[in-house]
Length: 289
Image (cartoon, rainbow, N blue to C red):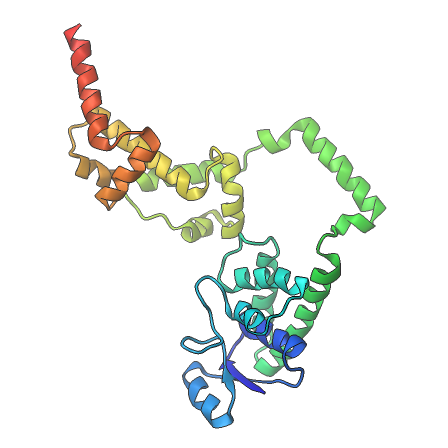
């Protein structure tokens, strides 16, 4: 069988050929062409198009083409189930679904940068997936230090030192303070939050920032913490200003009134108008006394 897709592959367009050769057709041939030529060349060469929109072998919902091939050909190998998650995460920029995702993306992007010939890139990429398959089959539960008594001992000493000094609790990275200031500044000026831009400003990897964020921000993820800060600002405005609730929603960073009401009620147990009425009543009762 001949298979055809767009040029300059990185993740799915190398992982899928490896999967097809390994489990579907060991003699399969793969062709890379510019995106706008894929369908014409597919007809001309009688090749199966893959990993482009509006063909059978493509992405569906949150899954990638690799997932579809696994499902289509009923590949039941447990190692492939492990690899599928890693490929999906790397191909869709979801580095949170498996700890190996960022590594596969980094290696694949670097490989594509170094090798400009797509056929050579595929040949080299096949070796990467052979290695990944061996790891998923035999080694995915094994740690690097497991086979090295010296490194293992060093690791144990280091962990004990960390625990004795409680450095993991007391030493807060510099980026945490800077990020708190960024969040507060952006809320005060109604800017739109963009985790990638913030990561660039802090010179941090976005996946690292997303993973480490909750450790220093009240066990909340980035979105939850920002919503909490916005609600706290809204409460302060309700208590200390005469702005309308619509104005307060905007000043707190909510462009949608219904979204503001829903998040406010989730945090306080009351919608904003009820909260303001209770506050007004409480002040009146205090004055009456």
